[in-house]
Image (tube, rainbow, N blue to C red; front, side):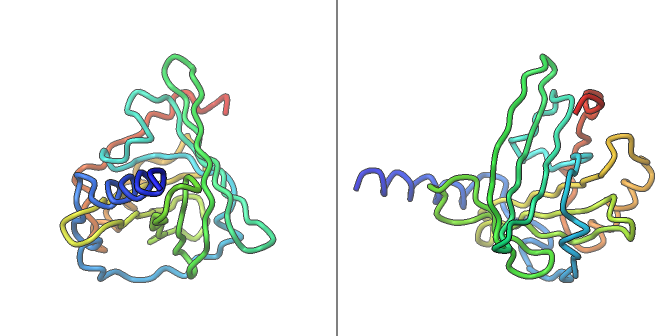
Length: 187
């Protein structure tokens, strides 16, 4: 019983995290993106991310994720990061495809409420993507934005154009920071 209460408290804490829902996450008014899941699968490097997203540290020299589709139409997601000291960290997640571009992600069997993961933009070549995580209720919760790229040696101007598109969709990009990719060449 205590274990169940503990898990419930952890999940409530997750919902009421300090960053708060903002912009389009708060209103829910944004366009659904018709994602081709087969083109989206594979390795993505983090180029920019909301500062409130704690898994990626500003001092990391590389952060990336691999997306794999299972035969039962669920996703396996392997997130990895490399610190300046060369320390490797990873987190595994599973995802359920709710609709094209919308996933429910769990990082643990103890996570009662899955996180929202929504692809709101991918360019025609499927080499730059914008993802949002709108989780919580009204003023409470988290609103994270990720800009993902296939190649860690990406065209900065193209990525900045995608950030502008995300802002035009109504998402708050005021806390978005560039992710260091200097150590990605060995990964």
